[in-house]
Image (cartoon, rainbow, N blue to C red):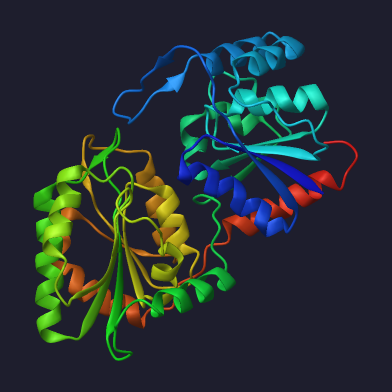
Length: 358
């Protein structure tokens, strides 16, 4: 079996697609989708997206499948692959029309992660959607081609964690006796934001903890972390407390799997379902850190409540950051469940491709 993986250049999206294919242990080709033509911006989002993706989606709704693929080929900067594939997989709304156009052209299975908009959902062979999408898109409940995940598929495996730990141990100096805390910091989007006072409060708590207990901190930011927050972390985490720091866009190499593998406990901000999913898939104690909010009620709140209810993590709001040391102690004594979203999706795809009709 061989899968075509579409890549929109957003690491959090592509990671979900590749994670499932790796769990299947099948071969795959990664195709970077880069389109020409006019662009538009989404509110409170970084970057822009090409309008042609929306146009292809409209053609698919009208069942103009051949034309949709021709338009894609015309506006694609790279020549679309023509090898034999059993399925095409992608993540997010932007790539969904491209996914379906390729599927219809070559008669292969289409797998779409996250609920796309402005495309005919029933035409996909499989829709992999997070539980919070079931609340936002009522039409999903009527479809038979849907598999629901708690969070998001990812690439976390025991092997990757072990290899990552071995790699990071070669470049850091952290006594075995130290409690190793991983800080996985997200950033701003249409729902959440992180600012300098938020970061100051978190670091103050960790430094106070270090007075009473030997700890080593491992820090990584994301592409959405605001520049002033990144600068604050750069200037205030160079002491012995932080044995490893990784800043997206600054560090040339990443030891992200190493951070997940070596740490005894993971603190991850609530703004990223992908990062939360990765942390909860490690089997390590996980505490979700509250971010500041642009809205009072956010759809992801339900996801976090379900994660807590199903024993995958604990949660500490911004207002209760002072309780973080106590929650860390409690977490280290707690037996958490391990999230298995990726394996669930892989099993469903194997079932789909093993049957002649879907």
